Length: 150
Image (tube, rainbow, N blue to C red; front, top):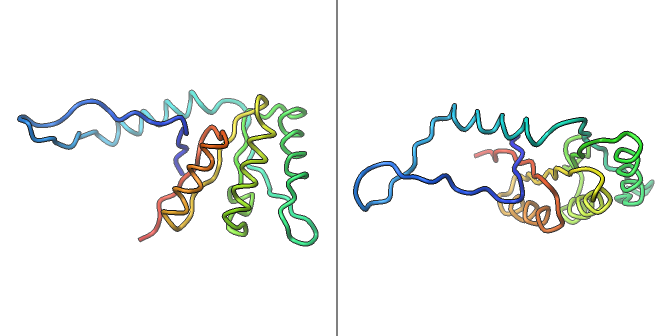
């Protein structure tokens, strides 16, 4: 799964081909892979944690315990970053609104303490776009996406 910086990516300059007709830039896959590896080495240092998503006994999202977990990881364990709500956070069992509230809680609690990667993947492209935009709006540092099937 690629981690996408939410600050925005600039398109690569340049064109391929002569004349006034715009052409597609050809970039070797090895070049992109090398760039991605370098970006990861620069952005992801130290200890990062994929966190659980706590629930109440009634099965509701427990935002207070989630914030407590973030404080514990950042303040006591000095985590450099948190990944939420991914596979460990049972994202598939959360509604879209619960996923948004979880990201809001983690980002809000993590500010100034550690960085946040929001898992925004969904089998629906529209849902993925909405979740990714939301993560960017609330201040997540990165988003994790997956390729959709089909």
